Image (cartoon, rainbow, N blue to C red; front, top):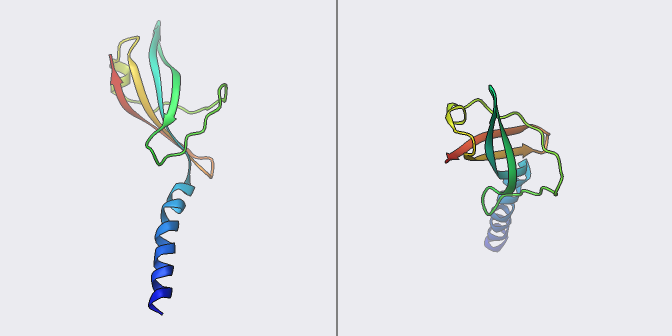
Length: 105
């Protein structure tokens, strides 16, 4: 009986991380550059990679990802040419979340 309980416990521990990853379809670190033209400011993204080693971030070249950048004073104050990093998470249900991680010069 102890062997059975140990086997069930071990199986549950191995399955738990997979279930946590199953909730998130994509978890990416997006890197881009800030551009200003007149009164408007935009970010052009040039790379996408896994946010951490356990994350899933499959983006094909030319694949379109649409999302709205959240309002952030750090981005508004960033000069043109600054490098920015965003975390982009997309869930299996289609909802997504984007947050500014860093702004560099």
